[in-house]
Length: 117
Image 1 (cartoon, rainbow, N blue to C red):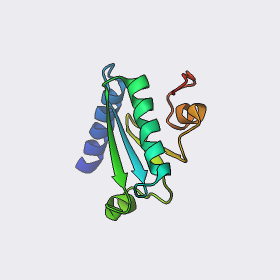
Image 2 (cartoon, rainbow, N blue to C red):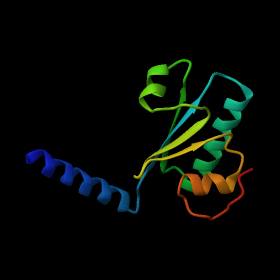
Image 3 (cartoon, rainbow, N blue to C red):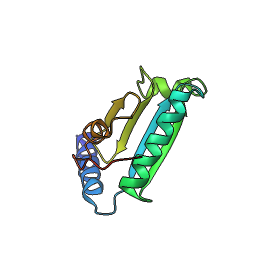
Image 4 (cartoon, one colour):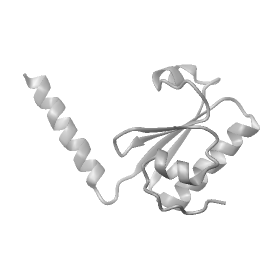
């Protein structure tokens, strides 16, 4: 019974964090090696974070060749994959990240539709 209370308290805490105005976005980008596609995905993810979140984000780039256990634990089946870990709920976007509208919808950022160059 105590476990249920703890999970309920955890959920309330997570909701409170998500509702906080100064919330920090936590994203993980999974790439496969140092290919052009991977470099392009990293650039696009950084551009998105800088233009939308200012300094209020943490972006971790994970090379699935270098850290396969992290890819397994994150249930990554294709690259590049951009995962918004926080705020909850977790969102995943698979692909080259070139379509700005898909980025906003896939990461549940709304449809502001800003152009990222």
